[in-house]
Amino acid sequence: MKRRLSDIGEFNLIESIAKTVKTGPSVIRGIGDDCAVLGYKKNKYLLFTTDMIIEGVHFDRKKASPLSIGHKALAVNISDIAACGGTPKWAVVSAGIPKYIDNSYANDIYKGINNLAQKFGIDLVGGDTNRSEKLVLSIALLGEVLKDELVLRQGAQQGDSLVLTGPLREKPDHLRFMPKIKESRFIAKKLMPTAMIDISDGLLSDLEHILKKSQKGAFLYESLIPIGGKKAPVKKVINIGEQFELLFTIPKSMLKFIPKGFYVIGEISGSRPFITFVGCSGERKKINPRGYTHF
Ligand code: ADP
Ligand code: MG
Image 1 (cartoon, protein in one colour):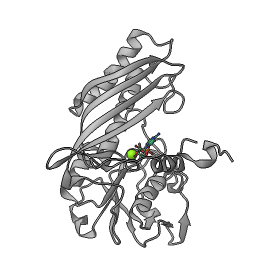
Image 2 (image 1 turned 180 degrees about the vertical axis):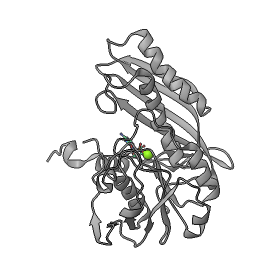
Image 3 (image 1 turned 90 degrees about the vertical axis):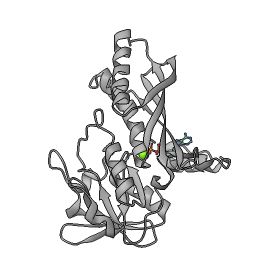
Image 4 (image 1 turned 135 degrees about the vertical axis):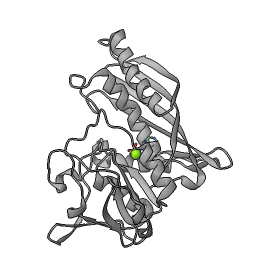
């Protein structure tokens, strides 16, 4: 029987793609993490990631400026390099351009990309241009990471603390956010992280990725989850995607080194990938993530 993508779900589809793929010995990590990890130098790995943004799915052309569209297209990729503890280096940009876009609009998109590339020392080294019905930008980004600073989704340990780099928001600035490279470098160098992910789909959904890969469970404490901007219910905000904060686990002994602005929100516990949500009055509930998926 044929199953529609909406029945399978994005993550199951990716898992079934992964099963069809065989990789060679240079691939340290293939499908399934924020970046692919590839053999490179004696003390470093290459990180390789790609992300696509599509008009009407990831931005509304009536609300988003061309500068912010370019910014977002690169920022979502940089965020995946940050999730692995690395430094972004080289990018190629593929653009699907509709008829309505003129030269100055296209130049502004590239201004958005270039400004951010410059900020992070990324070289734009190629791409591809085609006509398309809707505006589409797909960027592939290479980065580097010292072998002993690589952080994956897997690796969280019993008793580790669960930490966020900043507050969650009901309406995160999904167009103009700054990817957390500086924070990631600090975490990788100073905090002995055991696992990390960037929050693109929602706190619960992305935490579930860490738990499934690490074969661990977690307690999440409602009273500890920070909300930024306009006050909003924690139960709602933990399912909102495109926050682009980093979520990571560290041994409790490292807690004394976490800087101001980071938040401990829970801990790793148990060997089954369940999230136990502990409400403000102490009530406990096993929860199902309902973050963003594409189908
Ligand atoms: P992120 O939200 O961090 O960008 P995704 O959920 O998009 O991650 O992807 C999860 C993993 O699946 C990544 O390793 C990614 O490279 C891989 N992936 C996603 N889509 C595909 C695809 N169509 N073919 C092969 N691998 C894919
Ligand atoms: Mg990611």
